[in-house]
Length: 473
Image (cartoon, rainbow, N blue to C red; front, side, top):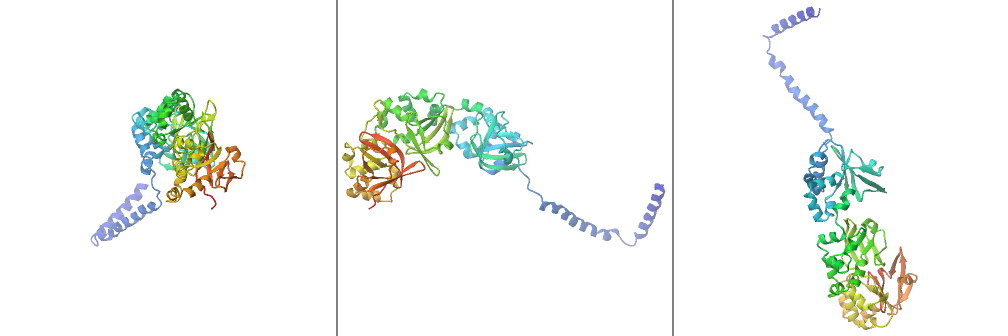
């Protein structure tokens, strides 16, 4: 039936075409069709481009493009993990920045780049299977990594910590997962102890603690600081020891007991990371005497020493690098009696050179080496340096005025910190009273903060302050 209908129609069309052929060529009548087709097709192909989202790059390419993960990219290449993290995934990567890698000792990173297996294990410890967004991360207490061991997750307000690394940027989406940026390279627990040197070996390997290493040897403290610990060491650099008065280091190296006391004054029991240090106002040392801790913005001071580098982790604790040798109250631990007067104690400390010069210029050295007792609020060299330009030079040429200013820093009698904190003022040797206030656990003399208290001497006590105070007139 179908066949009989189609044949007549086909014949009819053939006859019609044959009849029309002489009258007109087919080309002119078909010409408009091709001109319309491209226009219609272009419109159809251009329309989706306006709504098409840019294609996401994979984890590796995203990190490379960011520019702040050059060391991570190099490490992935060295460990042979590039192809894995360019794979389908999805993965969640806690990505340390270049600054995070820079916090590692140089020799550690160099050694890892030459050890693909160990490096690979560390890098896999930064990767979790699946795409875990920040909203889900904060609901977890831990997550298992590709390395096999879990990372711990802690949330404190808006701060998220992965182990001891802070998440500084979250939810960077990629085609095969998500990146969360962290500020510290994390070590798997199984490797952390074995791959790190102890405190002594770490200091020796750094190369900038040669004097400290020699001092530990001379004081017989090497074995102690190579022990289980953990310990927190505020480690003075070679430059810090060089700031001590000439001959001091040599003399100490010949006096193991005095040297040992000074070194133990730089050590705190337990592993106290920088994030915990900044919450403290003092810490008890192995010597049995506390060091003061002050925080001013990004600046952290241990006693009168600046922390110049923090959180150097070791197998038995942590090292924080400081720029000044800390001197404990000048006492003989056998007799518990001071061994030097106020002037000699200040000179031995090494950070009161300007004060010593000022006392000499004002003719007050003999007075403060006298019987006393005296209480001296002693400005450091940095405190004098903060005076307006040329002020100090002018004062050194005016002994009377300089003497009045210096006597304004001295109180008759031996006033320890516990007693000073109970007072509102004290009369100075200059005659005018100084104000004493306690705020947030800190003691202020006028507007100067007491940064180290109760440095005992044979004729009184020294309290270190961070500003030069001026009499009312």
